[in-house]
Amino acid sequence: MTSLLQYVTNEQGERVGVLLDWNTYSRLANPLGLDEECLVGLSVDELKALATCKLAVADQTRLDDLVARNVESLLCTDEVAELDDLLGKADQLTILKTRARYIYNLCAYKMGQRQRECLDSD
Image 1 (spheres, rainbow, N blue to C red):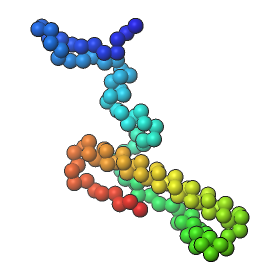
Image 2 (image 1 turned 180 degrees about the horizontal axis):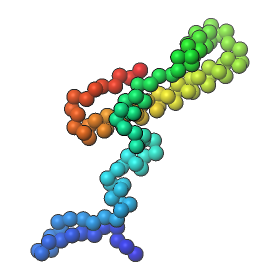
Image 3 (image 1 turned 90 degrees about the vertical axis):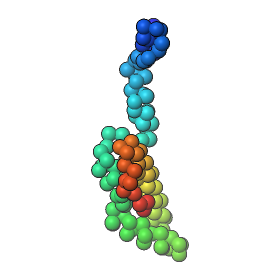
Image 4 (image 1 turned 180 degrees about the vertical axis):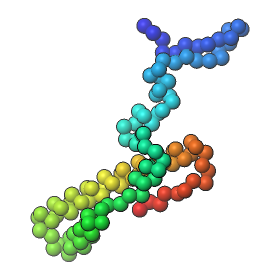
């Protein structure tokens, strides 16, 4: 059985370094890679674009119409289902945008950008 951790010592027997197996090193070097909720592998520009995207104009217009008519209880069964679907899409987009904003901010922090551009929440 191979040890996951080995120490490098100097002539006096003091620990001066550590050897890790590749899997352990990968987990420590890229902890976000373990989180399947995180968006990894995207550039900073791609994260910024994703964090600021919006629902398609046609979908947003239809959503606004359905919400307004729903307040007045004027929707048929099919329209209620359509409203639920559009609200679900909007929720998923919000989650995706939030993940992108989170990863963008982590990247900006790691790059030492103290005065980085703020991403306005929509």
